Length: 229
Length: 263
Image 1 (spheres, helix red, strand yellow):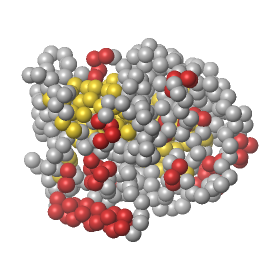
Image 2 (cartoon, one colour):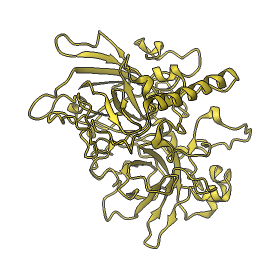
Image 3 (tube, chains in turn cyan, green):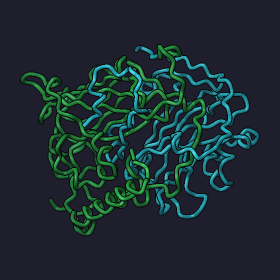
Image 4 (cartoon, chains in turn purple, cyan):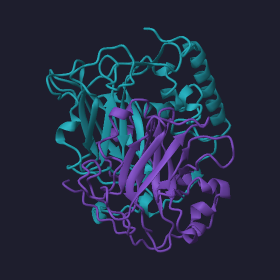
């Protein structure tokens, strides 16, 4: 049954009893492959775009075996650090939308063609926001794939500095000799440090921390087009 | 009906006992003051495929950064108007019980998620997915792909037309059947609200037996995945109607009224 409050046509009144309980997630199961992936979903930019970079990696399970039925999504700022807010991720007509989707292949591999995101605020560490789905994974996992190139901003990043060195390393992409960025995802590991750090943004799970860094004034000015909408 | 016994030797009774023991431990935890669980457990052994695919460490808290306070935007150039109707197929109509499924996507504060992408996929009326790896020897329906997508409207409503999916056998254990379900993929206004889930039909006798549905420990939370029959959505001599609303997690970004100050 749905939440009784939701059967009312008007939902804009403030809720008196705090947030509505969220709809639980469920696994994507084994058969999303013919439904969610779409042509060039993993190509955020066209081949030959200046600054184009390949972001790629392998998804592995707790035994170290590749996960051939995972779905990886990335969401990122553009090269200038702006959140673009443009439609067209499915159409893929050459508009950079900042969002992409890739399914893993038989060897657990995935790849995106994109550009490195810029800092959304001056001096801020740059990363791709990554969401992971898989058969056998009951609910999506969030993580971040940081760019490896600016040690200064990585060294002051609130998330990275809250982690030990080994765990932190799971969030930083590796620059490969061919210039590509490698981000392997380990869903599970019993050896310390190897399992990818997965994130929650839920304030109720936040450990008691009184010194929450204040966010710098946002430079990003997302111009949402709601295009064609 | 030849489930390979070596791959699926465990009995439903064994699985059901594990599910029951898990739920009992959850209830006892509640009595001892542990928090109510709103989502599924990733670490849930009755769903055998989860054994090696759940993180063993707690999720790490992060304050969302700017990019995480926004979500991708989809528009009408991404989604065709006919994609919300899974019964429109070249060459003929799919076999099955026609349905209208309608509901509202809102955030934790009850505010509509406007103009956002909803994706669905499902088995056909015989419980068969149009996927090369689906080996279930039930008929493929040449007029049903079972894939659709749509945008919510300005009040967060989505609506799709489809046929009722059949229950689906899988290899978690011997004689294992999934309750009939439609997969849903949803976006909010912030990427942290992203979910993929499954909608179920009221009164399904397979609920109690299903390790995936029962991975949600809390009975009230499980109910949130079950649509309600809604006679007002049924269409005369055409289709029966179901209502299913979706609540995403609360937003972090400051909400301004009117909300489209930045849109």
